[in-house]
Image 1 (cartoon, rainbow, N blue to C red):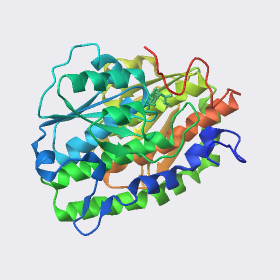
Image 2 (spheres, protein in one colour):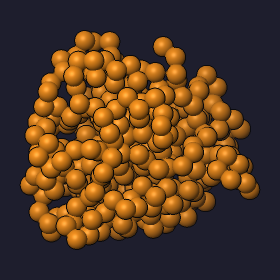
Image 3 (cartoon, rainbow, N blue to C red):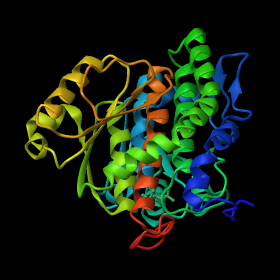
Image 4 (cartoon, rainbow, N blue to C red):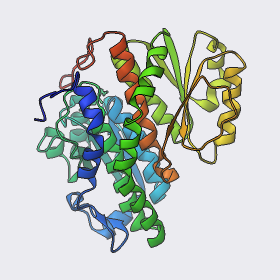
Length: 367
Ligand code: AGP
């Protein structure tokens, strides 16, 4: 059953492996192949309304906030609406200006995170339009929102979120395509994106099939007391999520930076004892990213690169992890999956309680 580890050593591993099926569930009934768009009945929003938003503001906590950053990029790229994410825990305390033509999006696995719930209530009180991207059906946040998108990831037990986060990315992509298709995205582009969405489950299967290799890399990374995770633009929220997952369960210090910021400070720390996990998609920034990687290897920094199949990096990276190519807009989703597996195996090899890390709760339902 869903609340039973079955033959798995940990819920986290079970939930990582469940992702292809979880993504299929999130897509089911939502792809409209006739009009090359996405149907989201739960939004309770007609096309005219969907065209009127001038800004999108995404609120969530922890990893849900990083998923929100991925989501903001999807929406801005696909629908060309300015979008950003902010931790709900900060938003609720700063007396934010609520704009009537902003679409607010609350994102939460549990639907019970107190900071996110209070942010939604404050928005509602001031007349803001808030939709929810929530996994648990009928949860407090789901009930407070004016419609939304259920994640359908199924029950998640491990404190470190994996399949719910992946489905947050999927749901944001669906929202981005939906908002894009009532604006400037062409039917041809809609078709291209829908096809890419349909490939995701199989592509995730091929990533998790690389587990043995990833476990080997993780065992080595786990020896370091401190690590960097770097990425830029689409790769940056991926790096942030990768660092968060790693520290949550391995208790190693992991810090995320924009690759472009390394030379403005953090490079001072790079050397033989500080490995860097670099997210390097095969996109328009590839050459620049490779340039930054040379800065790391020139200082003998151990390097683990997460990139796309077929990329020739030309850098002496100790470890190279590849994922299948998606459409560039959707890259963050697949690039995140190996980082979950790295964190899992690092924690496991260090002998930690992977499913219940110290000091953390599955959902933070108090102030
Ligand atoms: C995820 O691995 C973390 N345990 C944590 O950051 C989590 O994402 C955050 O507390 C938000 O939870 P929610 O999605 O249930 O609102």
